[in-house]
Image 1 (tube, rainbow, N blue to C red):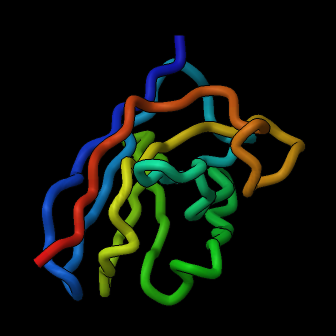
Image 2 (tube, one colour):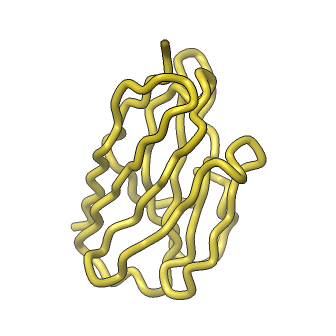
Length: 124
């Protein structure tokens, strides 16, 4: 059974940094992509970033490009999201998810397993 466990969320001031982790287990991820999505109160879930597990090729939403960096550690089956220059509008619950081959990296419906989420709050 696939399990995804996020960690690293918390409260940070505007301009600060956080690093989220997503520990994955239960399958061989070589042909998959791993994505990060977020959902703020009263808003729809939105794509943040994704990475191809085997090649490391990343993809970012325009709203985070240049501030966030996605990476993975193949040996530990863990994906990271380094978030710098955080803004109040980055406040949301952040989820990691796995995407099998095919589909669109930015479309949540194409991902098959999701973690439970970790809260990120950016406030002074």
